[in-house]
Image 1 (spheres, rainbow, N blue to C red):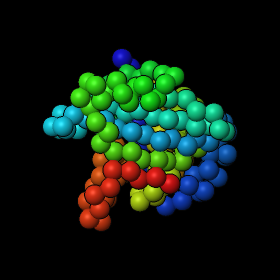
Image 2 (cartoon, one colour):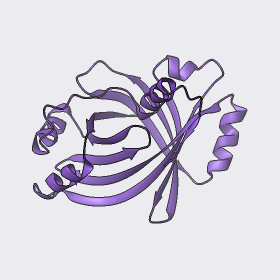
Image 3 (cartoon, rainbow, N blue to C red):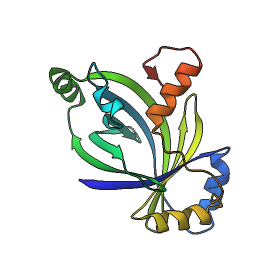
Length: 185
């Protein structure tokens, strides 16, 4: 299992961040459409223990890849830090059937557009989500390298958001009085 370390930052404009990414010599990797299905049992065991089981359909220029990911509970840290185990699979429908046979139902489906960049030793994701707006995620090998990238993007004063997108979407749906399980672009 690897450890995911990231800073999630709410921003007003992704265009401003894209402009800043070109200045320090960041490398654009790709634009993605991600459709994330989150699974849990009838008692919400994973959600209630701050863990997640996600099936991600990742589309890049019409080519789809599928990943099954387990995320452990967040560790105490200044940034969002948690265990992550991810495998690529080639049959999303069979994976969903397998999860259902194990007692996991689809709890939430959300989509986001992501532009992925590389800056230093960090991956910088520019994310747009329905209902929530624009975010920057900086994922790297340690807190110091992430903080360096955050400073270079002039985001050092933007507070980190520890919640997952799924959690933020669920909160927003609750605020809006909506009982939807799918939030698509």
